[in-house]
Length: 311
Image 1 (tube, rainbow, N blue to C red):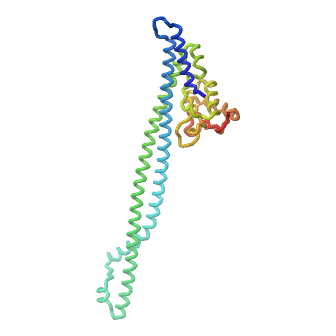
Image 2 (image 1 turned 90 degrees about the vertical axis):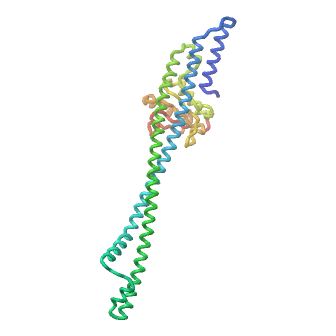
Image 3 (image 1 turned 45 degrees about the vertical axis):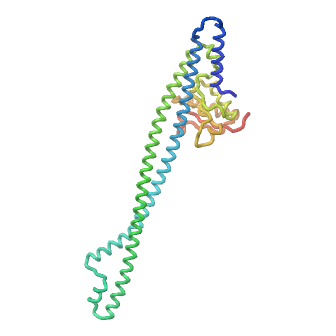
């Protein structure tokens, strides 16, 4: 099944040949009607290219947002791990502080001091035993303190890196979002130019191009039959639609499989409400699985996914 755009261009070629045939044998001249149709087709082609550019930017934004979400989650995990490490470090720090305070206050724990200060051999033995036990405990505490400190520093460094990654991901997403908005604005302008060019054609030319000729379409090749039928219905019924997109790369399977179309309506939410209600009322006719309208990222177009089989 030919796409609406291919049909329009075929009609334009036929119209051009007819114009040439009507003056066969006469001096060549530019047919204004033919020129207008050629101009219209070129404007439509440019709009289609912009639609594909917008779709690519949209996919890029989705990927950037996914990376931002992953970076944010990693940073949150690192912050939680850092809080745990610092909590585990606290008791070791307290023990080390006590040791430092004891040393500062003049406490000595060496064998020579025990020998010189012991009142008797038994007292010396007792002091040496206590000192060795104290030394071992202190060594354990200091070792644990060093390990906990190293772990906390490692986790703190990981947290700083994940924070930087999250910031970079957010900045990247912001740049892509701004670029997408610019491209969407360019597309809206181009679609308006296409519609104005179509309006300038004679009624005969408009009739030859077919209904809905002023609606640029992309990705019609590869749509499942019921998606093609729905797209043709929208084109014929709602001339106020800006454009229709079908097959394209996406992180979800609906568009790549040919089971989904996007009906772009721009800021005309009233038209979107009417079209969405119409599609839902005819869900059985077109095999509609679901629509998305007025939800996240679906305020300027209606997404429709249909079943894979309908002939």
